[in-house]
Image (cartoon, rainbow, N blue to C red; front, top):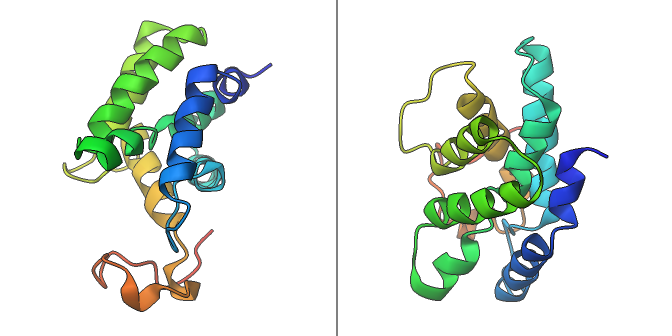
Length: 160
C-alpha cells in the first residue's frame, strides 16, 4: 500500500478533514476538501512527469493531502494555515512511516506553498506550488467576481 493511503486512513487526518468540511459547509468556492487535494496532487504529478523531474509520486500525493489541514487553525484563531499545516503534517507523517528527510521536504514545501518566497524553478516546492494554484478553475467558477484573488492570480484557462 502506498503510504499516502495511510495518510487518508489516519484518524488525525480524518478529524482535520471533517473539521474543514464543517467550517466550509457554507463556502461557495475554493473549498479545501479531498477533491482539491487530489487535484493538486494530480496536476503536480503531471508537471513532474512532463518536465522529467522524477519526484516521487508518494511525496507529491502526501504533500497535497496534508497541505491545507491547518485551515482549521486559521478558521479558529487566524493562525496562518501553512504554518499549522506543517505542524499537523509532521505528526501524521511520523505515524505513516515517512523518513525524517521526507518529512522535512514535505513540511518545508507546505510552509512555502503560499508563494511567499521565490521558489527555484523545477524544485519540488515549485512543482507543488504550480499544482496548487493551477488546481483552481477560476475561469469557469460561478463565484469568479466575488473572489478575493487578484485578476493576476486567477486561472483564466484550463492548463491540465
